[in-house]
Length: 167
Image (cartoon, rainbow, N blue to C red; front, side, top):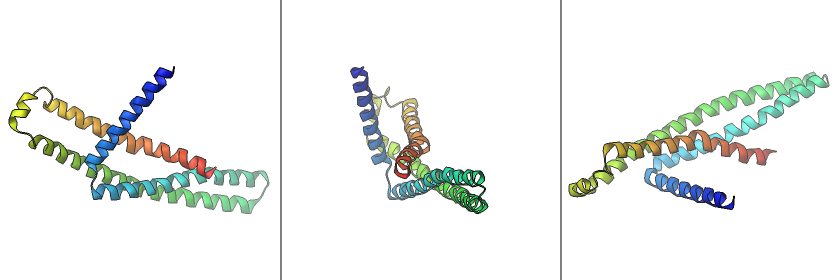
């Protein structure tokens, strides 16, 4: 059991090091700007998502206690939160796409730069390692990792952090 946990932590540490290396390779001032914008907008979007259930609870409480003003205020607040969250989510999605675009184009530049920095004799010597299919596999792995982080991991981590902060 302890061995499995240690192995999991080792794999996790190795993955973090790999992602740090990839971010260092792909980082540009434009990518940093879009990633900061995306994180701020994602935080605001998740906060609105967390507030909406409380407002729905206010509607239900108003119905339970026959308080029409509470129902109206909670419903109006829910509508404002819903449309604000959708508006900000669209802006966050735009920032996310710009981030992905800048890092993908930087990845292509980095691959080309790494290939052209070596002499042709070195490429012949490493023919099996530097085949077009292996380069494409590595490129696809970086794309997949970035997509998992940007589309899945960041929103999940934001939700967990804000859940503990707002509750």
